[in-house]
Image (cartoon, rainbow, N blue to C red; front, side):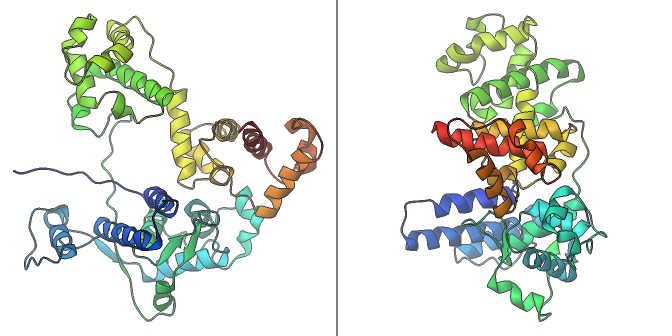
Length: 386
């Protein structure tokens, strides 16, 4: 039967899967097999030809003609000559020491003179500012595809940054060219809208209560450390919105509300539907998004711009996430190893409890933002409490 499939992935997914693979208990043969499968999946994600042909070829089946039904066949794929930009990106990886994430590499290519770039002296590199002709989104897309093509790799044993792979040498030497797919700009939608089919069915007058239901779901998801759809999928929320259950018995008749979920969450959702409960604050949502952005390699400055809040607030939330072991210090901060060690030593230079940030702040004034000190202290404190 005809069906639609929706695919979304990013560089952070690649990092997560590679980390899971490296940390697995399988032997080397198993890890090589799983790496091959991951490489094949990445190739399918970035494929510019008929996806069905590619998928069948993986299973040694031949399909002479394109299927005419996949997104590549129906919409066509725009490609562009990425040879020179790819060389610039690979050169940026090499010249910065093959230890930095995409966020920092993009800043270098765009010529952004922020604290992080200047603290490493990367504003003096020959690649600094050579990529100003392209947008940040274009550079991120290019780095993602370089990893998918195997031209760059993620250094899991180091800082989780990008490093060159042997297969990139012909490109750097000018022996081959590189065609990459051009990412299409997403259609602009209102911030309150969701990409799910159920959300598209929500009428204007229902939107406020719909967002209240989703806010409650996100709050519960964070409390239980599960994805929001595990609490209730959008289709269940939509049915709640339309059927307006007024009792636990009526809530039990909503599709997707089983006995266990009814007992756990029923009363809370009934209160939102009745208008008796205030919508949960969005701080939890900001925390969740901040953690995702940090894991994706964005700097505190970039995160502040994305979330439209101050860097001070970003550092406060980063320190909180580090303290709860939701982020590592390496994910939150991209400090040079020697500077990180110096800050850690300053906190550990003594006996008993860790000193407050104010006790060592003057020592690092002008060298690192004060928020960095709070993050390092939170990391050390979490280690002591383990």
